[in-house]
Length: 96
Length: 225
Image (cartoon, rainbow over all chains, first blue to last red):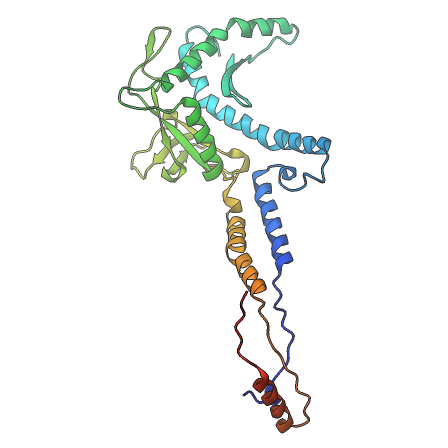
């Protein structure tokens, strides 16, 4: 048996940090969603938002994230595909 | 006149026309000009249609699906490309065009190597599958994501991923859900406990006696749930 004179008593917290881990998971998921530029209202605060604010957030995401991507990819695809063949097909008839 | 690609929600995308120098005073002229040249759109879509047509002995994937895969891969892995193949002549209005490709070979980002960029920021050839000779950028649709890539010279053309920045966060989430939460559940459910004793005896003999009394009183039990 351990010598009682040498025993030290410390308070050890063995209760699992469920809340902390839940908050951490919540934060990391928000980080993932923010990385994609998606509106977080679709994932988290449906009950907190009313219809108008939710539509506003979705429209904001479309105008600030999705549309610039669409325009950028659209321009790249067009420059390297449609515009090329357009200029090839109509090189004699149209001025560019 | 120029062509541009317009994305339409739900139906994909289609080419559209735009005027380089529109009539600023009379919009009617602009509308008529575009209306009278809709044949251009028909001809451009005819090229897409011929790419959708199966070659004998092959089951092809549609042009729209290939473009969708191109965009998906670019968003995930920085960049990707559709390289042109010329197996058969493409015909538009009865005329054959040997410069228009009849097939598109998908090049994943993992197969794309170094690129060469001119001083004026124009993409030149692209290395593919570690080959010594590089594929000219005029022989492919090379897609990259310039909105989130480093804005200096050739790094710009390597693009940026929308998914890779979240990789570490996703790994942590997986560990929390797959390892930490199950461990918590087991520990909580099993009722893990620790018995601590603070002796009240004044000397070592009295403290030892207390321990002996307590330890003698402990019984081995089996918990049945």
